[in-house]
Image (cartoon, rainbow, N blue to C red; front, side, top):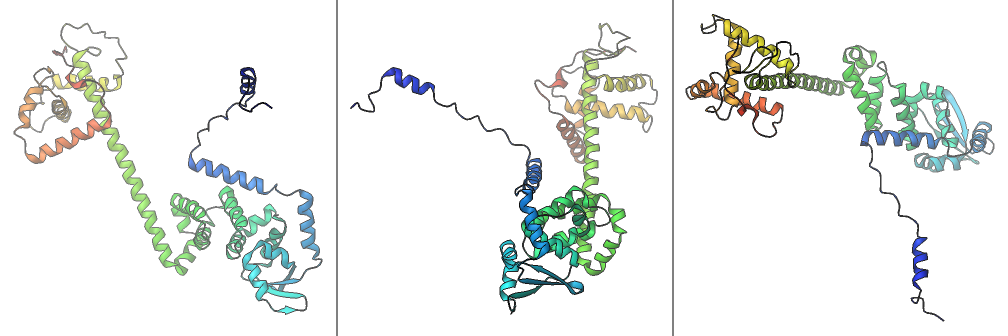
Length: 388
């Protein structure tokens, strides 16, 4: 008898060749919010098709006909429903405890489910039998079913109610009521959706009957909601203000780049000495928008007679500010040939601490608007003569 380890090379090669291929590497997951939402939708669809239709029909017929029932359910309006204790106990631990504590009358036991319409209780009990419900039932009694699912601990039904609200049942006229209910029934996602709708439609929602009722019954909740709305509005204003500031700093950065571009290469009819300028040129190195405005400002600055008069031309003031900003961004004023760059460097030493802090903050914001890669662009200057 041969040893197991005494195998021929041919046999070992054949065994290796028939080995199954390794499994594929795991695929990257999508974003968490989209993934969770897709999983919820898939779970809802899968839950509706777990049991065959014939089985669900049998459970529905069992509930409708009430054959062999041993539990009486009392509802509002002197309503009475009949059910099977085994089904209710298997579906809800809370109802199981109620049935055990109920007094027995023969083989019957009696429990009460009050506080909601009789139709809502009937839909709820039917769901415990077959996990079935009609679309119209959910549209009419979604709030009551959410309460029942929370009180009697039926997570499957609670997820369904939350899913239907997210898919279209949530509206401006019922968002306040659903929001309060979401807080009571411990459904944070539904509460978040309600809060988002309230923020977007505050004017309409604040004049609704639900808001007035909440203001009278839960004044503290109304104050907290108003405070959160004010906080969100303030955040939105700050976000818009920062976007505008970022846009201004980006424009200043592009203007500085266009300034150096004009001084080094020329743009249309303005440029360095001994440089052929194409008057019909429309595009220039990606700075056409900034170059056009800066070229007009340079033309005005060269010919304006009020540029040296204190309190004179506002356009010339703007040009003086741009020149000073360039001098603060320029690293080496000795090599830079941009007009007045060195003069502004000397002027910085005589400025007050307040002005110095203000200019440093502006320079920091302008540089943070865009990342500068490679060698400093503001040093790449040549001798400039404005041809006007």
